[in-house]
Length: 93
Image (cartoon, rainbow, N blue to C red; front, side, top):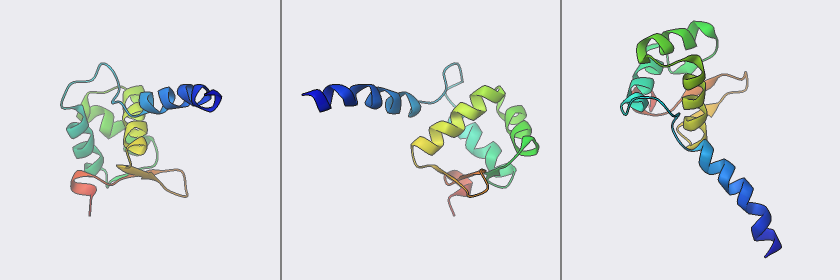
């Protein structure tokens, strides 16, 4: 019983990470995938994040939250240099 009670906060945090950012349009996930594909499927720096923000209409925080959402769902992977590679949509191959 104690182990279960201690794991509830962790489960809650994981569930919160697995949701798209609040306040974004319903098609934001698809728009994000398309925008990241347009910058080469890897998000490294402002040079990559800014075009994604402009193409999707999302704020930097929303783009970062969407990136965390993709990482939490196994749709993106963190690379050794700290950048993030998308693995869905046009970036799947």
